[in-house]
Image (cartoon, rainbow, N blue to C red; front, side, top):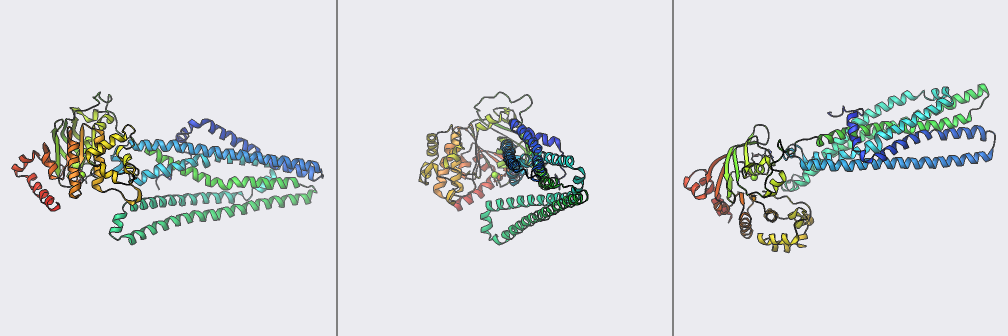
Length: 591
Ligand SMILES: Nc1ncnc2c1ncn2[C@@H]1O[C@H](COP(=O)(O)OP(=O)(O)OP(=O)(O)O)[C@@H](O)[C@H]1O
Ligand SMILES: [Mg+2]
């Protein structure tokens, strides 16, 4: 499995993760200090018990026994309080780092070039921003510092044991190799099944996400049974992967108990043998060793688990950094962006433009045309001929391989992206609605756009009355009650959005859907309002829109076939006139 090779000893990666903790340096240092203090006081309780048994219980000094017990209770309380603080602090640290990292990753994703989203499944990016980052928490909460804390306390307890009686300690440690071997196999097994669980979760996520989105298709084609069977299989895989992990735990934990019991048994056996031989009692040592062994095994049992968690965190962080290091973002040209006016006039020129989404599969081939400021141009062509692509290029959503695209005689690459996009208003073919109110979907939560302006624009487009008829009017939640808006209505909403923008250049990708006559008139009127007084590129399916254009560009499989006004092209009797015939037929059938 790629990625599994990464170990916890990848210090460069760890350092980078811990870099995110630097704003919380003090909490981090405090947690290290706490770890050390906790380790040091761990062997104190066994020591006190030994003293109590040997000095006071053996000699029946009752007052001291009570006194020592009170000290023990006090110590236990202090230890518990420190443990609480430690655990709270490491988790707090983890969650803070998670918060910061998630913001950084999402910011990065927001700025990526659109082509990245063609290559990466949405589910993957969701997993990066949600699940993977959550594992980073574990690096802090259960990973590095807690592991160091556990190791330190093991060392301290062992040190104490050797100091009290090194021979007895060695005897107590006889069953330890079993523990080490068991831990090794446990770690490996858990590691493997965790990977399977993770993959199964990702598969479940992806499946559910995709099928909920495509529910209409699933139901319309009665594919529920088949898809359900597929779901059940993925779900079963998920359970099986989990069961493997559970199996490992169920074998390992009792095994640790057995090893612990063996160690305790050895201690008791050895000391009683000594007592018989030498006539000397070692009661205090036995009691304190039993406690020591417990204190030793408790961290040992979870250490393997913690190493796994740490390793998973490291792998997750590697994936996250891959997203953060993705440099497919819009970059300024050498020497920076040109100083350009804030408001463009909107003269557009394509010069021998070649473009492919991937490799050498050119979608646009040698496309050249000019649009004067204020002109309206219609692009027509069969489906897949590259119409939407042309407008995506203008907006710099994708980058051309050859040729040049200019607005007001400046290469679009030289514009500050913000200025460029502020001047280009877009109405897309299929309008995406975010869950939220109508007004939020129109303004995209831009506080500079007042409600009055929105209403004014809606009136101009002719949508105001329609919106007012919705329950709640402009506050109507478009995702609620299972009713969203129709394709035509959505496009009208985005007309309002574009109008409010008041761009110099308007791009309109007409929805192909046929609408009823009333909406048709509404849309027709709205388009006229929109394109009035600005450079407009309309990917048109309506004859009426096409006729009104100053120029028509006829596109066929990425190449410009013809260019000219409606009458010129009709007179030519070429590609357009054929297309027109077909469109006209279609139009007549519809209306
Ligand atoms: N994101 C993408 N990644 C790769 N190829 C793409 C992408 N988008 C479109 N294409 C391809 O580019 C070609 C042109 O697509 P485009 O969307 O520009 O067509 P269109 O003329 O707008 O069609 P329609 O009238 O159906 O909207 C098609 O062959 C399509 O398969
Ligand atoms: Mg299209």
